[in-house]
Length: 234
Image 1 (cartoon, rainbow, N blue to C red):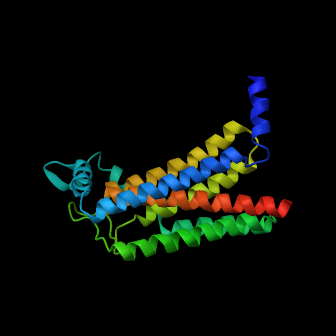
Image 2 (cartoon, one colour; image 1 turned 60 degrees about the vertical axis):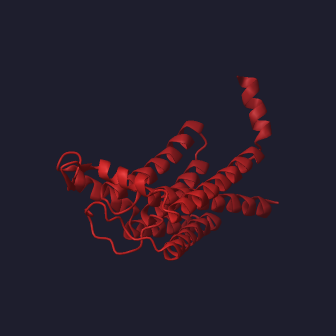
């Protein structure tokens, strides 16, 4: 085991070795390809049966206005979905960027801001291009006025929480804590996406596209930031 770890350290010099870069590029490419294929299916109407079935499965069979689960669950889900709202995410991004600037980490602060603004522009641009309306299969459990595809909550949660989780993980030396920090970021983004389905305000494919685009954009920004950092070090 010691020999294996020593070989891995030689293979992965520094914080971001060649294998990590290749894995990151593969993740970005795979996510983008998946979103492209999904978008094509959505445009052709091939996903409607799936979208409808999932939303109906989250409602009482005899009354689709009522979500499944105990009465208090809907209130909890509304609270959790706020973790992906514009107000909450803006507060988190502003606090994180200011902290990084005060700590002298200008590249990391720029990464957070560029990742956030770019993700927001990408999501809203695609919403306008797709023009997909919100679900009409079940009553919404909260008011929404924007277009549906992709889910902005799912996309921006993936962008921001994955970016911050990766930055925190890079600052941590212990591998177990790295996995934990990034795992928490993935979990929060995942939960936010699920809340949109439970509330009936997004089609499942909206959320899948948001997750895919958000993960791809966050990883792409991290790869570029890592490349810039290595160039500056030289």
